[in-house]
Image 1 (tube, each protein chain N blue to C red):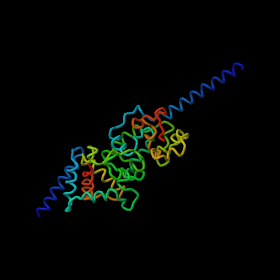
Image 2: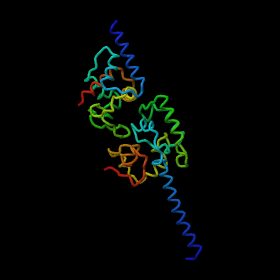
Image 3: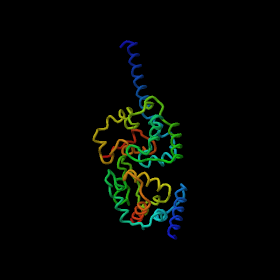
Image 4: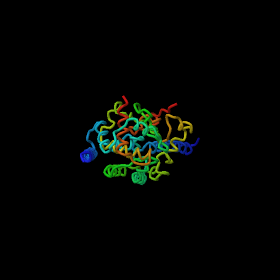
Length: 132
Length: 160
C-alpha cells in the first residue's frame, strides 16, 4: 500500500520533471526519478553492460560515446565529435529532464530497436555517475 | 591579328572570366556565412552532423527529411511536434532555390548533389576513407569553418 503510493508519487514527480522542457535537474535527480518507477535499485554494473553491449545489432552506446565516456566520442556514421557523456566530465549532461528523455528515446531505439525501460535508464545514469 | 579577331578574343576571355566568377558564386552561394542559423536548428540538427546550410537543399528535400526523422539515414532523429514545426518553417523559408539546388538530389543527400560531386572531384577517393574524415557528410573534417557555414576553399585543411 505505502509502496504503491510512493511509486505513484515518484511517477508524478518524474512526469512533472519531464513535462518542463528547461527545468534544471541533476544526474542524481534523474536517476532517482527513473529508479522510482521500478521496484529494484539502480545498478551501475548493469548500466555499464547495457552501454557496451551491441544487443545483437550493429551499434552499442559505446560505438559513438566510447567505452568509457569520460572523453569525447565520435558519431559512428557522421564522424562528428560528441562531447563526453559522463556528467563529471561534462556538466551539461543529465542536467535537463526533457533532453535526457529525448536522447534516451532516440539512442535506445538506434542501439536496441526499442525504448529503454526506466530502470535501464537509471542503471546507465548510475554507472555514468561512477566515472570520475 | 586583325581588329575583329582581337575583339572576338577579348570578348571570349571576358566571357570565360565572367562565367568562372559566376560558377564560383553559384557554388559558394549556399547561403552560408550570411545566414544566421536558427538556434533550434543548430541545437537539434548539429548535434549529430554539421549544420548544413539550408540553401544546400531544395524545400522538397527538407520537407521529406522532416517527415521522416524517426528513420533519418539509419538513426532515430525524432522530434516533438512543436520543434518540427519551427524547423519546417525556417528550412522552407531558407531552402535553396537557385538552379543548381532547385532539383532534389538522390536520397535528399547534400553529398549526392551534382554540384557537391563536381566541387569535390579533385579529392582523391582515399581521402574520404581516412579515419579523420570517415564520411562525405563530415564537412568539418576538412572545412575548418563549416560549423559557421563557411565552406570557402581557403579554409580547407585536409587531414592526413
